[in-house]
Length: 259
Ligand SMILES: NC(=O)c1ccc[n+]([C@@H]2O[C@H](COP(=O)([O-])OP(=O)(O)OC[C@H]3O[C@@H](n4cnc5c(N)ncnc54)[C@H](OP(=O)(O)O)[C@@H]3O)[C@@H](O)[C@H]2O)c1
Image (cartoon, rainbow, N blue to C red; front, top):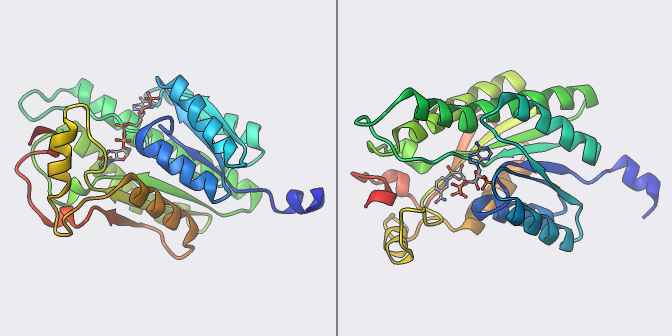
């Protein structure tokens, strides 16, 4: 195809936060396969980020990695212009990165709350705001996908600060969908138990994964396919897609990591 074609129809570009490893990497590879140019954001996992970029490039797509500590507002505000500078434009942001530290009402403190609110909520809102400005300037439309958690629909007392941050992000998803329309759609994707946490053995994870009405929770591929669906369906905004085998319909006394 001619250069003029590519200038008129540049490939869509997505920024995925925390995309070096685990779910973020799976989302990156799925979207690269579908033709997206992928900006792989990372913080500590530089080596894994390079591997994800190399694998996206192998899928015949342009990809690059970008460092930012999402607790730092200045770094978050620099991330999106850096991505736009590299790719020329940006069409979507997947807010996947997340702090996930254990606390409960017994040891709750402002420091843990602030940490989770900064990276899991503040960064996601700032990136949405900057994407909206960028899209308005281009008279273009785009999408924000926020990774949530099925546990919001059936909460237990574990991971208090994390859960509060995801609850805030769920409300922000709806508020942003109203305010940023029509340029930006904003969609939540809420996985069930998908990958083992640092507190779980594989054996325990395999047992817990079966605890759902469907007899299985979500796979990383299920979650990535739902993110892709949210990015591609032009009628969805201000709602959350649950991808959890129905886990949100069951009550659990504790978080899976502690069961
Ligand atoms: N895994 C599950 O079963 C499950 C279940 C329900 C919901 N979810 C949601 O799905 C998403 C992905 O899950 P996951 O288990 O793959 O996540 P994860 O491994 O716990 O974290 C993903 C990445 O977030 C990045 N991150 C954390 N704090 C950061 C900060 N301050 N600045 C920059 N990056 C930061 C880390 O990047 P670096 O390694 O580069 O530092 C990390 O690799 C999360 O939003 C999670 O809440 C997951």
